[in-house]
Length: 332
Image 1: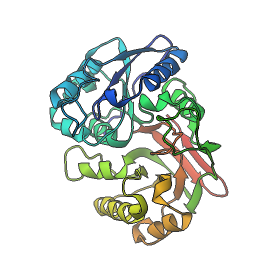
Image 2 (image 1 turned 90 degrees about the vertical axis):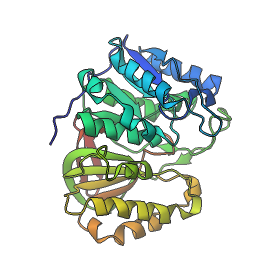
Image 3 (image 1 turned 90 degrees about the horizontal axis):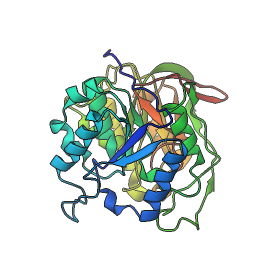
């Protein structure tokens, strides 16, 4: 297996650069940007922004040009003052950038890169091409949430600032509301926690992310090796009530790729409310696949498109035990 390059932890006084490799930051509300900036400053960090974060080619794309986005990415890795890079928000086309990235520059200047959703393409490509451990965690915009952000911040700090292990636990409450439209009137749902579908224990390195975006990398040089890995997978609610069908076939596609590889375990992130994903639907998808028969599996973990979310190191090492209790330990 390739050598994993683990970037240095963040310390107080370090600079965090916000870039927009997917949608433009201009779609974020002013209060969201201010709250997120203050959150990072409260952790003792300094926040700066890529010069093209507000650029947008057109309303159709709502993102800057490939050249602008690449410039901000390269500049963030090149700047020795920058210790971590956070994506502003997700979108649909960060995979447009993959052929234009200077992977040697990144390898020679390893630093934290954190984001999720569409950013899966960017994270996994960089990990596959350089061996850099990258982080499936909050966007900058995720920290702009006034209420219900404690769990997200706790795990972000645990993984990126502290040296001790991080245990992925279940948040007390979760939400899937339009918080960015109304920060005060929020709907929180009691979290019933993760559920074991298949018992067992395993250890290995983590790969995964947003399933439909991850699958875009299949057959390309940007797809990470899935051999002997623990997969973590989630998807957004774009497909609504037919989420289970879409997720099933996307998962099947990934399992075809994994044929003959030793997948150690799978952790599935919680689906959004509009997907109407019951435990029964999850279990039906999983039990219908012979490939998953003897693999430890849990569903409804706190990552994906509901909030709050944990921070998962892609290329990081985890030990899991799904028995009476669920133990997911990121060992760093």
